[in-house]
Length: 108
Length: 120
Image: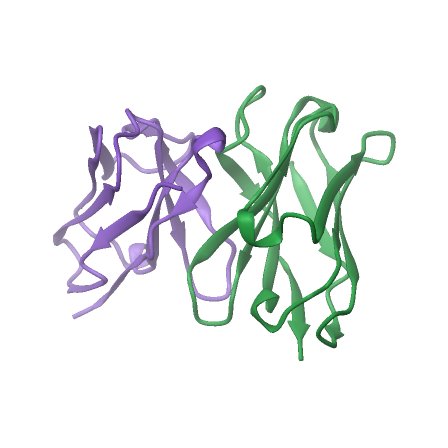
């Protein structure tokens, strides 16, 4: 199976900051990459798919990029509701769906 | 509005069995693949299993192959996960998740609120 890694594992930031999270796949996955947001006690929410396409209703301050093995999620202008844990996911069923270990964004 | 309501989680001894259910509403159930994803307490997300809209194709993570069985009843808009030979490491909150796009399996949206399985 493809292994997914994320960095950093946690980041402390302030409202208004720009935050970038990176995700790396152990082998090339084209753009079969999604990002999810999970708040404490809540189910995950799909933010971005196909590496850079925003899910309906997701604010435009979220953006994704990358292809192959290296990807990133950027939050431009962090809002109070954005403090959460973010997971990347390799979405190709035939390669074995896998999630990254998560990146926690908390208040500095 | 899409709604997914999981049930069936419980405390069970190692080696025991459970059947989880996910009642779906608000969308054309038979057209979408459905999935189970779990999250151990304080840990990250782990995909467990997926089933195509017709139920004819199923997929599993290696650690549950031969022990878990995913099925669906499209007449009842319900997804199931039969879990046998449960292990302590199967302890987790089990989420039901709808495929985000018709014809795809690996993209999950939305998710239910989860049902807790404790093996001890």
